Image (cartoon, rainbow, N blue to C red; front, side, top):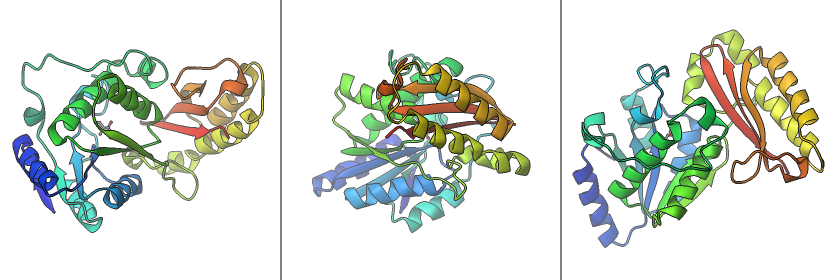
Length: 279
Ligand code: PAF
């Protein structure tokens, strides 16, 4: 497995693989791998002849008061984990390699990114869409792999690919959870033991809520209020949002239109996000 830091080196290596007829797969990440990332690599490995993982903590998707500086990083550990998954190539550029100092062009998705996390994290999805577009242009993958935990991110990227005609097939992998239900996230390491013990209350309430929504009709408010109360009392955290949304991340008023329950919860120093599909 090779670790490359320069865009041109990646372009050259990918071009050679393409001439050899291999399908190119990209797993964009910010590193500090957990089982969710490894699942994406396995999916990529099973579908593509060249499996490339990018590791880049992207400054443009963090707000000024967010955790860019203390986002967990461990390239040596990531390298060993990726190698064990038979990844062919890691692309780990420096910020200066990815962004010119006077970089002034962005990708702005204007609909799917507006609600949910877009409200609490202004500029976040612009940063995500821009860096993913750049990675697509550098790697030119046939397929790219994203996790469903970041459901809105997935929807924004699908929309960008459609609207800007990127010749990339976007594949989504299921959320990977701890045995107690907590969705895996690199940021879970920040939870104190007591917060960690209460964190699965988010998933449990969403799961129960999805059962309440399934087959329900009419106003979503009474159901959402009940789930809201349950999440906050089970976790001791503060909900940033709890929303009933359709496939395009639009909030729905009628329970029968709800496709997902999605939430962001502040628990101690961590902002947890999670979602559950309504069957
Ligand atoms: O999901 C992530 O890790 C990041 O948002 C992504 C897609 C790698 C873009 O920086």
